Length: 536
Image (cartoon, rainbow, N blue to C red):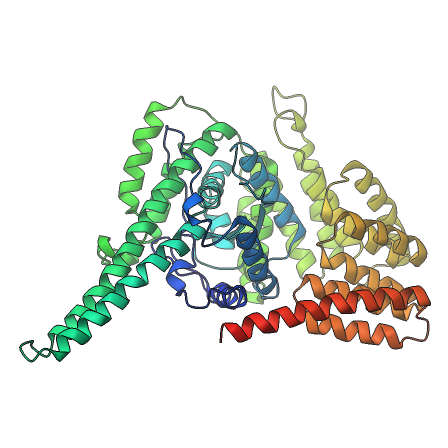
């Protein structure tokens, strides 16, 4: 995905296409891309509590419609090859992100948004917020953040955009500004009719009206950035993160943006980085100093991101050299992260024995107590869930013998009991049951999972695979239909229902379910076509 920079409101191309399609579906096809991007950037501080804003935008984009818009966009993003659908990264980002959200009363809004944090593969140092509580982090930003407080500053800033409903307010602002070019056009026509008016005056009037509308949008964007900075600072303070890390990150960002130094300040949608650094320094001086140690999860997530950033042979070779250099550091966290990164690298290349060796080494290094500390868990967050998930990935990889698969099932049961909320481990338990031929048990387990977590298409895919192994053709197509529905493929889901209806093992009860679901999806499809027709 090609990313935007912190100085502009241009989203990555696949995201922008997804936004346009979603807006067209929801009746916002006349809006330009300028209003679609919630500007991104690290948080800057503010002491005073900000009010919940966005009430004036309710008539333009209600919280419910805002969430629906975000979900429509996310369906397209999840299909993009640069969406990092990685359990370790997603669970880590959502853990730290939702802890930040919890520190901001009212951040979920009237609609009680469920925030979702995810990563996309992109070399630009950036992050962005989508409508309804969806927040993305570029892989390059994860690698650029030198400590967890720097990452938290970016996430807090993006949470500020969502909490203050900047996207809804920008849409409302642009609807008002749409009248400015229209008025300018009328004036231009009147000027052209006047024989006493120079021929270039109508063009000047028209361009002036368009320029005024654009400048108003830029002014709104800059104000939104400052507002998100203030909210982000409040979130950082309430969450106990080190706010001084913001200044270091902005300095690094300023270095990365020097190529844009010739852009006039009045064309920037974000406040100048120097201005924001000075503002943060002033606010940090007034706040009490607070040091925050990084969790081991942060370093493990960065190591995994480095492997996933570029999976070409040349890039993986460079990544290996990076980890080998990192191994020489004295820091226990850095050494653990390097060993874990080498395990992920070996797994990526299919070198399973080496992957297991490096993973064992990482766990051993992490478990070593430091001087004056009784155990690693006394100072660090529990990295057990990440280690357990990666161990299961190694043992369940293609090519493992039956004995290893059997051991994987025992480990998966134990890991799921210890980390019941870890979604990656929960799905690996289903994989382990399937790999060991326990299809009936796997189907029962997955049926329970899809009832608890209805929005995970992977669960329906795994259930369909299990039904196929059992020869239950009708149920297989029903499960695939639900997976397609969750991914926005209404027509594909209808095709699967048609196949389920024709399956020789379809029972009377199955036919009743097929009929009901088909009526629902046909009504949805009819509504979608109606909205698309209305919007051209």
